[in-house]
Length: 170
Image 1 (cartoon, one colour):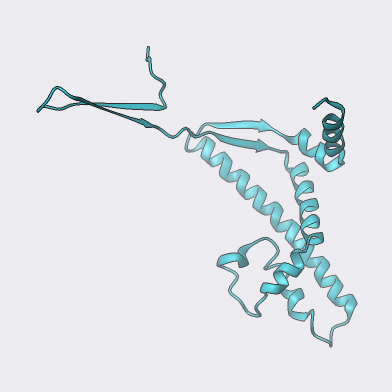
Image 2 (cartoon, rainbow, N blue to C red):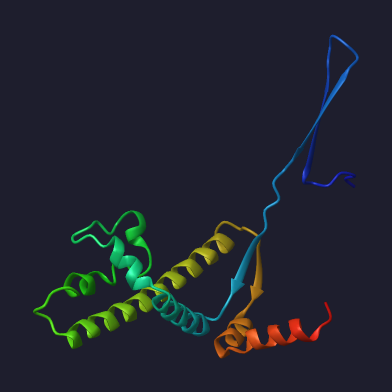
């Protein structure tokens, strides 16, 4: 039976020229991987709402500020969610020969593609999680979070948290 925990490394060195003992302590890093697992239909719905929130918070304006016609979308921030999807819209946004209805439809399609690509990214990440767990044998601490995300989507979690915060004594 080990007396010391496995996260502690102790190095004892006895000097041959004296009776002094050198002791050094080192901590091994403790790593814990936590996987919040959410069913894909619920995760996709959540991602869609999250994209809508990002658009409302100024995603289009932020990308517009950095938009460069003909830019390379394979590197840097241009790989971020929404950048490539908004390209076509931003190219015609200022053009007078296109009517507003067409521009509005392009923006709507760009947002839809952003949601679709976000879902694909979530699926890709899930595949990577499964490979790390199954092929590499990493220990993952899986937390089933579908019900939490369903509650978030219903909008009741904030009301519940607020009620608890306000009803419990400080």
